[in-house]
Length: 419
Image (tube, rainbow, N blue to C red; front, side, top):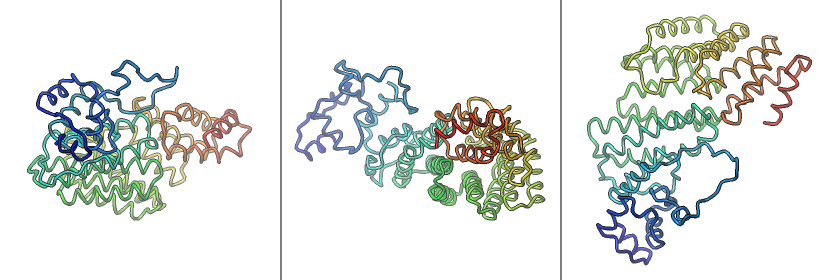
C-alpha cells in the first residue's frame, strides 16, 4: 500500500515489515521527508499528527513556544496512547480504521476522509470510534457550548456515515451499533447547529438521524430524533409540528424501558402547547412528565440522557410558564434549576441563569435580573451558545428602560462589549 502510493508520486521508499514494526513501536517518531510526502499523498488533508506522528520540530528539539500566559484553546489533545493507536491503524488497517480512530478527535477535514472500499468489513475498532466521538462532542458541549464546536464536529459525522456506507458486510450487533452510533452522532451535531442558531442545518441533521433510526428499526434512536426535532420546531415557532414530533417520540419510546425518556418527551410536548398558548394542554403534559420523572432513573435510560436530572426538569418547566407569560412562576423554577445544577455542566448552568435573568426582567425585578445576567457574562468567554446570548439580549432590551436600578448600567455596559 505504501510502496504503491510512493510510485504514484515518483518516490522510492523501502517500506518493509521491519519499518512497519519500528513505526508501530514508536521508534520512528517522525518519518523522513520522502515517507512524509507519501503518507500525506495517501491521506490528503491529514497532518502527520493526525496519523500519530510527532511534529518534526519537536523531534529535532525545537518545540513550538506558545505566547506566555496565553490559554490553550478548548480542543481535544491527542496523548501518546492515542498516537500509538493511530500509527498502528495507519500502517496496518488502511483508510477505514484511520478515519474511524480520527473520528474521536473531532478534527478531520472533510476532504481528508479516504475512500473506503465497499467490501471492507467494519469491526469493533471502527464502531467504538464512532461511539467515542459522540461522547467527546457531548462532553465538550457541556463545558463550552456549541458555537465553537459545530464546524469541527460536522467532519467526524461525514466520516461516520462513510463507515456506515462501507459497512455493508457488517452483521448483527456490529451493524446495529454502527447505525445507532452514526444516528446519535447526527443528533449531537444537529444539536450543536441548533444551539448555535443554525436551525436549517439542525433540521437536516435530525432528519438524517430519524432516517437512520427507521432503517435500523431502532426505537430508542427514533425517540431521541423526535425529541430534538420537537425542541427545534418549538424554537423555530412551529408549535404544532413540535407537538406532533413530541407525540411521535412518545410512541417510539413505548418500546424503550425508560420512564425518564418518556418524561423528557412529555416536557417537549408541554413546551409546544405553551408556545401555542394552550395552558390546559401544557399542564396535562407537565403532569405526565412529573409522574414519569418520579419513577426515578433506570439502568436502561439512554446514555445521552445524562443531562436530564431535576435541574433540567425545572428549567424546561420554567420555559413553559415563561411562554405562557407567568414570569414569577417561571422565575421560581429557573432559580431552582440554577441551585440544583452541578457546575460540571457549565453550559447548562449558564443557560439556566440566562433564563432566570430574562424571567426576572420581564417580571419587574430589574436588580435581581441584572445580578443573574452578570453571572452569565462572567463565563461567556468559556461558554459559547447563541441561545444564551439571545436570552441576554432579551434581558438587556427589557432592562434598558430601567437604567436607574442597581446593576443595570453595569450589565448594559458589559454586554455591549459582546455585541
